[in-house]
Length: 98
View 1 (cartoon, rainbow, N blue to C red):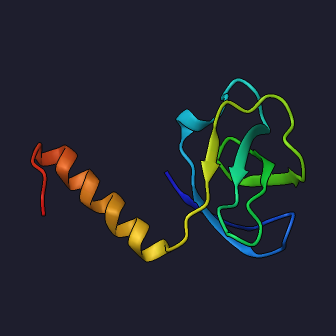
View 2 (cartoon, one colour; view 1 turned 90 degrees about the vertical axis):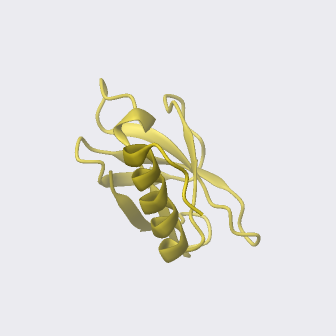
C-alpha cells in the first residue's frame, strides 16, 4: 500500500503517512481515517477522507465520527521505507535479519 504526502490542516506543514486497506471502512467512500501529526509543535489529530484508491479527497480539522483507526505521521520517509522493506523480507524468509 502507498505512502501519502499531504499537509496538516492545523499547522500547514507537510506530513507523510502509510495507509493500507485494513485501516479504512471499505464499505463507505470517501472513507474517514484519523491522522495524528506527531510533530512536537503541532501534535493534533485531523480526519482525512480517502477514496477507493487510498487517495486523500479532503480533510477536516476535528475528529469526525466513522474512522476505525488513527495513523501516526512518519518523521523520516527513508528510514520508514527501509524498515518496511526489511520487515517484508523477514516475512518472506521467516528469519529476522540484523
